[in-house]
Image 1 (tube, rainbow, N blue to C red):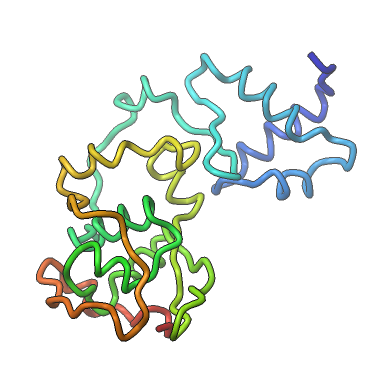
Image 2 (spheres, rainbow, N blue to C red; image 1 turned 60 degrees about the horizontal axis):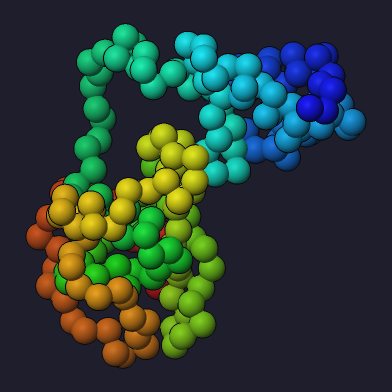
Length: 211
């Protein structure tokens, strides 16, 4: 194994412990000396913490310390949930995760109902989805995808660790229809208004001012 600079390793450990949010390798490199071998140091630190009460975990392109999964129950406590996501928002999040990049119209086609006014905004405000560009079709609609914050929240290292689509269908989070098709703006079938949306979704701002 490559020799590890213990001073750099301690600095990396301190930076990660002090941060309230997951950090990317680029952000870590900005805080450590220029000659610090960030990927090597992260691998070494992850191995050092593998059997401890906290583990160094990767979420997409970011790194963060988290309580070891087998000890999580010791630290669990009841807490007030400020906002519970509606079923519509959960279904939208699941569809986005599995079909990204995906447009609003494509989400509606899969669900069979129109999204309420602020469903995507609720997920955006939560930090779980973000715009991924525009589809090169008439109207150039915005496409959406998940974020590293989404991966971190659900304890995933990458999208490859998402449960199988069949599991989501059994849970009722995806319907059994074929995969989405891309329609022109005038070709999208009309859908019913989403009856599952909650008041929080309905009162949220429109889709970031985008089509």
